[in-house]
Image (tube, rainbow over all chains, first blue to last red; front, side, top):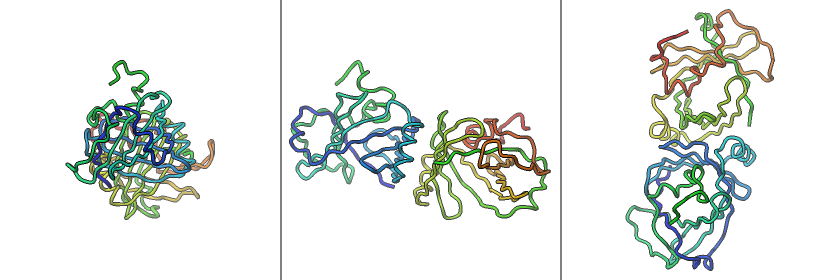
Length: 159
Length: 159
């Protein structure tokens, strides 16, 4: 079990694009939308994972992850996961020794970009790059499982 | 992925007890109670599994199962699964070449016993032992995940 301490931000501009280290396409779905736990199946390249996260709002989340057979993941995503699926490209960006994960969404969440940083301790400080926008760590709408029920393309108010 | 074809029965009497081949104690919980899928974490002896089942009512169910670390399972069951947990002893009984799994529940489902047989094909026939009671395959109340929300000890009408 790992306890996640992550902070989530919008992007102020496209400045991050010239610092992309690597990009990976994700296709993922959620098996559960219950208040306390999210259960996700994710396919990336030729690998697949099942992930269980406690849905505590904010920066602390309990997380468990297990690799599962790609064929199983494909069936579970197509047949059992809630629709629409989450499709996104994750860009890895290094800034001042910190690793940022920038998710650029596609499909029904096209137009949304979110940057995340994972810290090793509560209260750890980090430099905010010039391309970083408003923090949305506590904003439920930006949780990937909520982007299934309420995709970005259907939002009336967009920050 | 395996497709389960199983039939579930109540027990008419205790005649099965003298044919028990092996008994295993299970402690399990559910992460999701959504209509279409159940997600279960089960501990038995020193092993633990995560199981995903499509919740199609009746004899056909899609099923995926992955072994996970015991310590993870223990945390997930204690902290993330819905309560009460399902506690039961599974007795394996051989009858006429068929394997019956008889679940004897404890905790909040104490008093309930259910026998299950898993068939390899739809329509496969099998001998009904003298200790077998009414079939409850299609009765939602006997699904383990429903025994969390509505434990047997709280039922008003018991068959």
